[in-house]
Length: 414
Image (cartoon, rainbow, N blue to C red):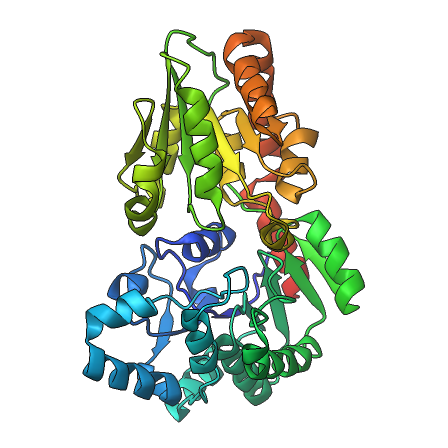
């Protein structure tokens, strides 16, 4: 089967060890390297430029975004690099779910910088001659890059949404009205250049078709490793949480940590980014809960295989749930493929919660008593535990095969 040539325009390279980089890695894991070319901004944080994959990539220098470049230089000259990192950080993630602050205000206006794409970049794109432009957007900067390239090449664009951020980006305050207006104008122009787009879940695809009057399909993260059905050893139970603690997830893990104090045979291991661990570990850790060093994505299966129950949580705050309601956590397929029943502590109307419940791969809870009851059921009823573990493996094999993802991509890109 002939695979289309894809030009990926994003804020993160395939294989960078963050959520977006790992998601891209699983999405395009079956794609040959001569069928992919990436265009990304050179990150200010060196580790965000380091990828575990060697797909061809053109990195736009920081001077290609002059407003942002000049402001950063002036700020660091006056206040120093350390103050810059503390004040604004070094990431380019969209801040749609963040509360308004001076930090979000500055980031929003820095993001409006003009984008300069030089002739040698256009020439490389022309020589590559892509069939389609794929992007997760996420900011004005990336939207401007995509629009300039799409207009120059006259290639169709495919959006891929992982969270419901579009309606909330740059919307924290009336002071960010200008960036919001700029983004929406770009978004509407780009939407006209799309035929069919992608969402992370069926619920999101259905909602977006109504909202944007465009066709949407959905692809969930694929997996290549499948573990064995698990048996629980009641004498010692290990829970595992993998992922970020932002969006108030740390508060939910703190609830669980308090419940675990009642048990002598249950431990919770948390694998979170170092910055999150530094910020929240003292609020969560106790004799039953331990923060672990982050592991590379290639080691995830090994860590999961030595665990008994996976923990998934999302905030009950309406402003945050509005952002996560249609998302499907990229960790869920990995938990499924390892045969780990899921202890889900999140609103039951979220797409992730519904997927766990409908697949019968875990037990969902919405309050402390339900969380306590769900935990007790998982650790005390071996038949339920084994059945959930079997369902996890079967669901991973039926819904998350790499071949399934690749076929859907080919259909949408063609």
